[in-house]
Each structure stands twice: as C-alpha cells, then as structure tokens.
Image 1 (cartoon, rainbow, N blue to C red):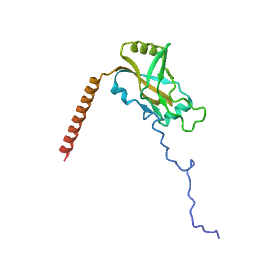
Image 2: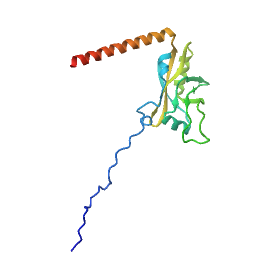
Image 3: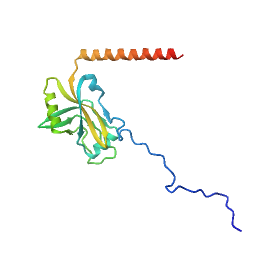
Length: 183
C-alpha cells in the first residue's frame, strides 16, 4: 500500500512564478527632469528653446541619475564654433573613487553646426544669453534644454509676480465656486 502524504504538490508554470515588475527610477526613465532651473523664468524672458546633448563622464551621468545636478548660476557660451555649458554643478558620485569628476567643470554641448551658428547669431544681440533650463534623460542619454534668454528688469519681475498672483486668486475663486455649487 502506498504511503500517504500530508501535503499536496503544486504544479508550477513553465516560466516559474511571476515577479512584479520593478519600477524604474523616474529620472532615469525620462519621466521626470533630473534638474530644473526654476530661477531662469524668474530672472529672464525665455525666448526660444533648443535641445542639446551634453558630453559627460561616466560618474557624472551616475550623479545626475542620483539627482545631484544643479543648474543655478549656470549659462551657455559659444566659442570657436562650439557650444559649452559653464557653472553646472554635478556633485561627486557617491560610489566614485579617486577618478571622480570635478563638480563644476566646463562641459561641451553636442549640437549641429547649423544650430550653433543660429545660437551664435541670437546671443550676439545685446542683452541676450544662453541659459540651461533643465537636464533630463532621453533614450538613456542626458539632454540639456537651452533657452535664448533676455534679462528681466526689477519692474518686469514685479509685473510677472502680480500676474501670477492674480491667476492664482482667480483659480482659487473658480475652485471655491465649484465646491459651493457641488453641495
């Protein structure tokens, strides 16, 4: 007579048990910006935007994925037919070694020759400059959004703030009215 067992044998799928998909980092997958220059729209009128690749070292890319990039006080420069990004602070990689990168080194922007020529023409106008507005990933590569910008005067900043405050108040009034009507 065969021996009886107290447990049942469970049949498994050919693939094995299904594992839940591991969520990717939103910065690395391109769903969220790696760095954003919030003061750019406050201090400048952003006239036209361009997308440029950035020539980086390996530890710099890893630091950007960790969220250690800062665009404050950074700007673009065109010299000898090439575009460069200055004063972008990318912190040292946490698992780096002695070969880690310099935090604020000058980085080359990867643009087509026609785009560089167009940017040069636009920045030669008095009061216009190149400002990086955000760093983000696209298809695993770091991209920089550059804006041709014109500096704001203090009264321009006050006017923008008044307009923003008025918009905020109208949105609040509309939402309050919606909630009042819903009851």
